[in-house]
Length: 278
Ligand code: AMP
Figure 1 (cartoon, helix red, strand yellow):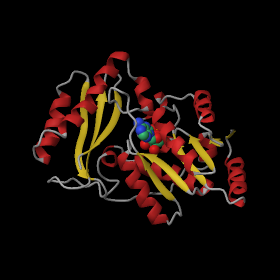
Figure 2 (cartoon, protein in one colour; figure 1 turned 90 degrees about the vertical axis):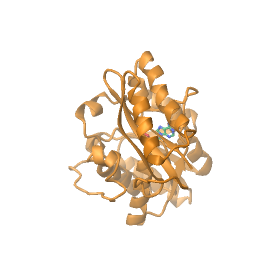
Figure 3 (spheres, protein in one colour; figure 1 turned 60 degrees about the horizontal axis):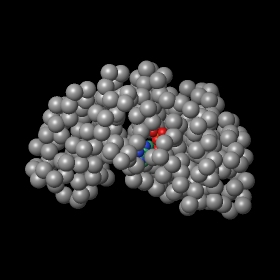
Figure 4 (cartoon, helix red, strand yellow; figure 1 turned 90 degrees about the horizontal axis):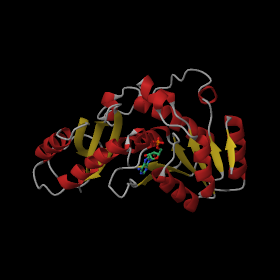
């Protein structure tokens, strides 16, 4: 496995792979890797000749400087994991390498990116689009892998791929969870042991909500109430939306997903999760 910190070195390796007719899988990450990331990487390794994993905490998608500062980082541990998974190339650039100039490109896909995360974190998807756009231009991947934990991100990337005519297959991968049900996240490392026990209740309420048999609006309100009743949890939003357009639905039908963001604990840590209703 080789690790590159310059775009040129990455481009050279990628051009050589393309010249040999090899397929390339791209897995964009922000590092602090866990079994959720590993599931994407395993899939890419099994489906492509070459897998490129980027490890880059992208500043342009953070709207909160403290969140960016405290984001967990451990490149050496990440490299050990990626090597054990059979990855060929790790791309871990500095911010200056990724953005030699301030990036003024605008990525905007309303109404998909104006709801939920997009409404609360104004630069999040523009920043995400910038970095995914760069990675795709540099790697020209055959396939790119994204986790359904970031449900809205997949929809935004899908819109971007279509808009820019990127010739790649977007591969959504299911959410990986702890046995307790807690969705794996790099941010879980910021939780105390006690907060982790509390955070488990988020997925528990979401799962239970599938059995309530009440209307959409009532379900949405009850999820918020049940979670807010729990000490140290505070819902930022819970929206029940169409799984493709991400617009709110008012009645149960096919392809409906509930997306939640919850603040947990003293720090607090911002956690996201989602549940598919049908
Ligand atoms: P991040 O490092 O948080 O930007 O995540 C990189 C990729 O891993 C994104 O496509 C995420 O959706 C995906 N990912 C993160 N956590 C999980 C998880 N628990 N299960 C599946 N995919 C995940």
